[in-house]
Structures are given as structure tokens and as C-alpha cells.
Image (cartoon, rainbow, N blue to C red):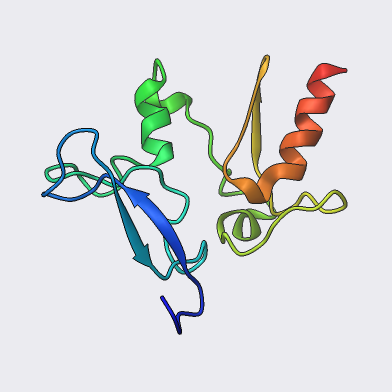
Length: 126
């Protein structure tokens, strides 16, 4: 990976030559903005449609009704900032973040929403 601007080792179970439960290390340059699979745990297997193993799709399959899934509303004044993946929230600026609270459950999309997640969680506890 010498010479790559970003790099890491990634554990993957994706590959035709691997048996169930086997994993391999895949070395490739990747970065959260440049690699759309950066935060993914599992990649699609042969025969699964693109995006099938995304967190959003996994959550939607687990819900009683897929329409219960909440995403950033398109009329949110900060919609572009929230969906770009290029900005992180801060303790002073939550506008790029999106978190959902449902009774005693709080969820956020990715590590860049951590401040909003923590604030929402703390409010739930108080």
C-alpha cells in the first residue's frame, strides 16, 4: 500500500473462494469519502442486489414495516449538509447530523453524528 494516499487493511468475507465463516484480509486504499463501502461490515454476495447488505437495508428488513424507517427529510433546511457525508457535527454545530429517537432507543447513521447522538441520549436519560 506504499504510495497510496489513504490505506488500511480490511477484513472481508467476500469472495467466491471463501467458505462460510472464512475471512481474508484485503489491502486496498480506501477512505470514508472516497470509498462508499468504508463503513460497511458485509458486502453483497453473488445474487444479492446492490445495497442489499447496507445498514439501511438491514434495518428496514428488521422493522415490522419498512416504511417505519426514518431518513433525513428532503425538506430539512440542512438536507444537503446531512446527506453529503463530507461534514461532521460538533458540540457547537449539530446541523450536519441526523439522529432518531424512538421512545427509549436512539440511533445515528455514522461516527460523524456522535455529538448529536450523545446529546440526544443524554436528554433521554435526564
